[in-house]
Every structure is written in C-alpha cells, then in structure tokens.
Image 1 (cartoon, rainbow, N blue to C red):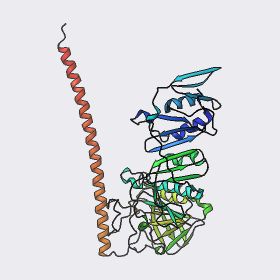
Image 2 (image 1 turned 45 degrees about the horizontal axis):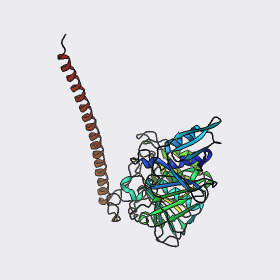
Image 3 (image 1 turned 90 degrees about the vertical axis):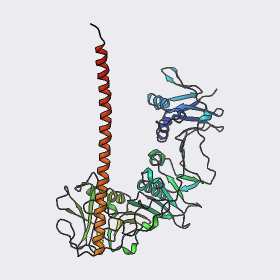
Image 4 (image 1 turned 135 degrees about the horizontal axis):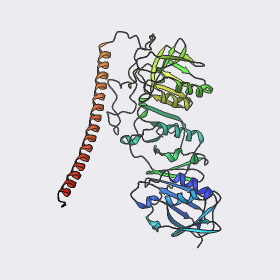
Length: 473
C-alpha cells in the first residue's frame, strides 16, 4: 500500500489554517480530526470542519498511488509536525503514522475512526467568480466593520448588495458605524451575506493568489490557488442600509486630508490625551478659521487640549463634533481622506471615491448621540428598538463660537429641543439603572456561591465532629 506522504514544510501551514476552523471544544469526536485524502488524480488534500464551515488545503504536487482517505486527530498531527524538521516528511497509513527516527522510521498508532463519519463538504456547482484585489480589499474592510453581537446575527457578515445590477455594494455595519464600497459588478442574481470568520483574514490565505467565489442558495465558497473555504450563508434579510446614509448635499463642512500624511495623522491621534479610554475613547474634530483642530483631554474636568492638523484643507462653516477615536483611526487607515460634517449630532461621513464610512458621533461627555425623536420604522427582521445606524436627525444649528474649554455657547432652546434633552436625560438614567441591576445580580450570584461553599465547609466540619465523637479512647 502506498502511504500518503506529507512534507512538514507544507503540513505546518496547513494545520495553522485548519486550526482556525476546528473547534477544540466540539462534542463530536470526528470534528477533532483532519481528513487526509489522495484523489484518483494523485492530489493530496487536508480538510477540517466545525460542521458550519469547511477549510481544505491542497498540497503543491500530486503523488502516485490509488485513491485513499483516512482520519487523523488534529492534535496528533500538530504534535508530530512540531517535533519534525521542516525538510522531513511523515507517511500516513490506515491506523498509523510513520516518521523519521534517527536512521530508521518511527511509528505512532492512530485510533481508527471510519471516514464515512466525517461531514461531507458541500459542493457548489455554479461558475466561479473572480474577485480582483480591490474587491477583496473592500470585503476585508467591510468585515472589520461588521457586528460581532450574536443577537444580531444578520449583521455578523459582509453583505454583497446586488439590488442595483450595474453598481453592486459591499457593506458591513455594527450599528454604530457603517462601511460601504461600490463600483463593482458581479454576475450574481441575488444578494449574498458572507459570514465573517478569522480564516478569511489569515495572511496565508490572502497571500495565496487571487480569490474566486462560488455561491448557491445555501452556501458560499471562497478559494485561492490551494485553499478553499466553504460556509453556510447567513440566512435573513439584511437591513435597509441605504436609509442610514446621510445626504451628501446636507454636508456643509468638508475636510480634505493629504493621503500621504494619513499615517502621521493616525499616530498623532493615538498620542492625543484621552479621558475615557476604557469606554468611548472620545476625540473631537473642530473646524475653526479654516483650520482643523484635534481635541482631547486627560481628565473629564479639564479643558480640551487643541492640536492643529497641518496640511488639512477645511471648507465651509465652523463645526465641532466628537467621535470614537478608534473609528476615526479605522477610517484613515482605509485611506478615506475626505470628511463631510452636517452638524454636531448628525452622522459623519468619511469617504474617498466609491468607498465610505458613516460614523455616529458622541456627545462631548462621551455618550452616544440620540436617534431622532421620530425614527423611521426598522426593517421587519430587525427589532425596532435596535436600529442599525439611525437615520440622520433633522438639521440642528451648529455652534460656531466654542469657549476655551471646548463647550458650546448655546442659543436659546425651543420647547422641542428641551423635550429632546429631557428624553436623553431619562435614557441615561435608565441605562445607569440597568447597569446597577446587572452589578447587583452579579453580587447576588457571588454571595449565593459563597453561601453554598460555606454550607459545604460547615457540613464537612460537622461530619468530622460526629466522627470524633464516636471515637473510643
């Protein structure tokens, strides 16, 4: 019998990639195994799965021998690969693995598990669609903006919107910021939600040549030269993301940054003082007298420190807005060098050509800005109380005369504005109440746990005393 030979130089990266989909806590024993197979054409492939996703890696060169497939425990292969040199090889046979041991071959037994128990990798029979580098870049950027909240599963992926056949969009959002990119035309009949997964961001997969995509009604496949990732699609209707995009015509203040200076600007933002680093990471953008200023402070009671940004062009009226700095850094890292501001509470837009990121601003104290008083109905599949990026609120007069502390000199408020402020205050109080309830619940659980431990110790002491009482001297 011709064994399946695996070069260690190829096995190590293969196991690194398979390890991103193999779940070590899976209850089914077969999910802890790697399927090693040799096809009739001689190609050798390794496959791992968690039932929902399948990752397959094909070796560089075919080998001689009849078709063959065996299941090998992932941990056993990983240990062997670590103990072998990169120029060595291991040989797979049913029930055992052979490896170099001094001048002979060593052997380790493998517990037999029928190959038929391994889940069947879905086969997508549609035509492959080439994904050029710019499209792949947009997919990665959208993935980084998608939600990780399991209760909003439909947002846990990258949405390829094909509703406009001549201009497909790549979209990702977590409800506080939204990314979209257009100028793509793919031969897809229906829109697709690609589930986010750490394997898709793995450098080896991204360095393995051009991506190709296959899609059917249930699954999506992304493949490179030697790697293949197959996953179930996210089932559900993606929210109407277009209604969250502010009208570009409403923006009056525009900031144009030098693309060559974005990296330096990111470093400057990272060095700015931050009084709420553990929560909101607030940073202010102020447009004043044709200049862009960054606002930050070390303590909430201190005045804002203002740092001018050189080589930034500002057009339009003066403006002041506060944002989470991690989102500002993300947008600049994507090369979105133009910033359009409507007012202090409306969504802000970073953009460059066909790519854009919409970010909900913060209030100067770090809290999120509110949704409008009369929000539009949420999509059917989304809970109305948890909208994805609320639509832009009605125009609000911008403050053009900040004080030295960076606070606004407010104009007289209307009754409607005072009512809105009251609703915000009530909401903040409710949030504080919910937080206190959560803390109280955790404390009660801890007290209950301590009481149970004390009861066990008391019972143990009592049993010991009883046994001592029965002793006869």
